[in-house]
Length: 133
Ligand code: SF4
Ligand code: SF4
View 1 (tube, helix red, strand yellow):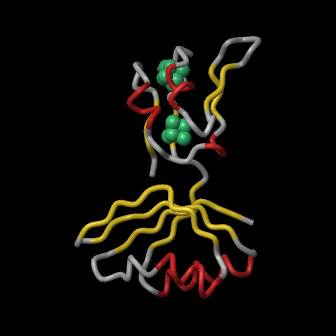
View 2: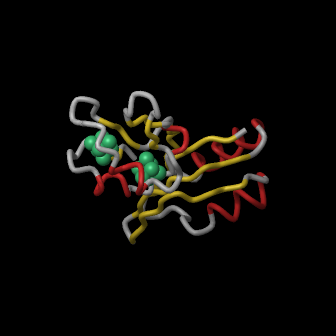
View 3: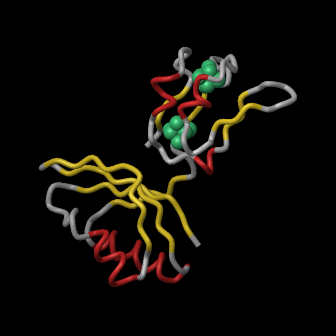
């Protein structure tokens, strides 16, 4: 199984060793989608793939290291009131989370495909997309 998670680090957490431990100790395949770190701490958004048991043990390990672990269901939010189906987001979204309905020409959004790159935020002339990491 796999899931998207946000890890929030405080100043004293062992940020750099986390992915190594996930792989070595819990046989988790981590795919880092976003990382923002400095001396005061930071956050990392990643996909983790592994068995249900290993994922559970890995999350417990992270929490024991004083790392806050948040399960993410989606990375962005689209304001349907602002969106006018211009399609600008479709061409910049390399993961194809945005697509144009061939019948209605409405722009659909598949949250499962989003990897939180942020490209659509700047591409959207209506400022309809916000990051919710
Ligand atoms: S944040 Fe990136 S991956 Fe997600 S919908 Fe926008 S362009 Fe696509
Ligand atoms: S770029 Fe913005 S307004 Fe245009 S389709 Fe995408 S979300 Fe809607």
